[in-house]
Length: 387
Ligand SMILES: *Cc1c(COP(=O)(O)O)cnc(C)c1O
Image (cartoon, rainbow, N blue to C red; front, side, top):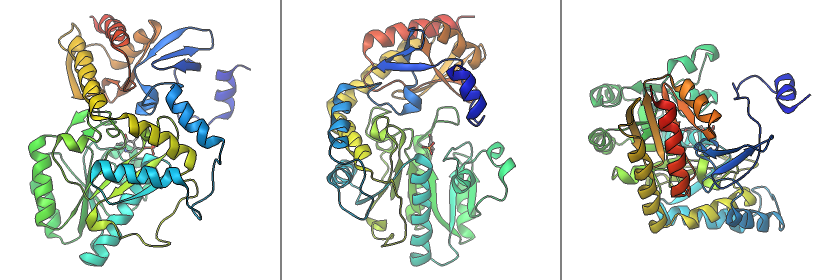
């Protein structure tokens, strides 16, 4: 059996994979088992922040790997403490809980909201309001948070205590708040899985004002948008928001599993001993990888991300067969005249790997993708979109 046959036989059929086996890579170039090279415009769904096998990231990870790979959360380890410090310093948040994925980072945010509201508002104040078309994860609770009905259908009953409003609809939120049960609002600044849809800045500000007026927590899911993806460290920084809770994961550790829930001053002491935990959370190897990523996300580097992202966007906007380009920084969604699946397979045949999101072609390249690869990839994508 080859890899595809073996995978088909033994791995659960939850992913409709492309007929492609990647064996190695360097930066934004990856290679299949036949030695063919591809420009990777997906970076493992916004995970490999500095691309494949980045030498500086490998050094940081290997250094920790050679010391100790795991010690449990019964003991202190320096990478975990240093990463939490760096995240707080860069965001103004006060405390961090580490987990292993985006869904878990959101689970923690939801637990914080419920405990905070029970202690500070009222015991039956447990509802978290999210947006329609959002995506917050695959656990039963984060599925309930996800504002897309088709994710809910097969897995009832989901965790109760979630309401969904349309982006822009502050009146519905006001009506829910009058019911007296709303603890928090959880939003993505750019809906990723929902089709790369940026939040309207006026709505974001209105939402924040309402949260303050009504004493609700403002929680931002930065799992996909975070860690430099949009040209700022976190996407909420484009919107001038001051969240109480920020969840992140995907690109945080540059390719190792790590989730983080950042807690602001109002909620920093909500979780106490025994209230939450994770065996692997804050693993020192993952934290060492994340520290090396975070240290490289300087203001100069982020400005260069924004510049190269604008270059990519400019090369695609207005091209024949591309109706529009939406997104922020290196998180772009192309509405194409041809079906996205057709564009994506044409790109793959010509050596460029793209993603989809809803009906769009989605691009999430490594943050350090060089200009020449941006130009080469854009040329292939333009060609594939041409009617
Ligand atoms: C990917 C994603 C998640 C889920 O992350 P996992 O690591 O797959 O659990 C949650 N929220 C957003 C916005 C995401 O893009």
